[in-house]
Image (cartoon, rainbow, N blue to C red):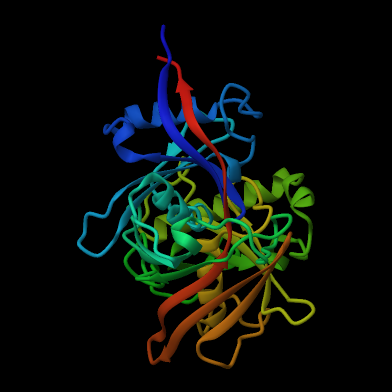
Length: 357
């Protein structure tokens, strides 16, 4: 059976990496699309040995780009989270780290014309409907990848990419607090079910018998912890109106602990069946919103910034993520207007990837 060649770019976006395609080069039908992406990544094997995945959830992500279709966006960004050991693709979430590569990829693909100096790329996240503006460094009308910006979880430095997120509240459920409460008790544990850029279930690490300062490797080596987390996550998703999520990566799960050395909070972010080696951009925004929400589980463990916009510093296994949040405390809780982060990206390869059949 002959193989099918598909043009692609391969980029690191933030602390993730994966193939970036033009949506028109892939099957329109989602079932056929999923099979294609499984073949691209080599899903179903812990090493993704028969594809270009990297054996980790941060290296089995796929971006699919097309011209903006809503009258505002320059680019539509459709995301697929491909599983590592399962033949499974989840099209529900989006990814803020892979998003960092969307601006450069759109320019490289000819979807957006680069300006001299810097180029603003307006992006619509197809999966969630969120709107994001990316500012890409383009001296001389070409994407600049080299620079002095460093982000935790990536060696060296690169050119900065500024991401400003709008319409982040209720990305999947339509509301900030999908259960109507700042706190719920599920399985004997207090949680905050919150939806900002990414729906999440957030709890205190101490309530799960850990400090929250463990390494990713230590956490991933504790199957009993994941079993307990998954029970709470699935039950919380039902209360959030998300139905049965046993085969979906959303809502994500987060554990909070006290910060050290001037941070706002320490967090461990779950994808959800492994611990993230650093911090997801969307998850970081959701956790930052949790820190700022009165009555949430962050109270008592986090240091809430007093200024507005607030710089929330989230400490994670690889370092820190700074999230700048424009918000207002209201009688009903908190009004999150926008969130911003600084990321980097790098074009690693371009060419064709082959899939069976």
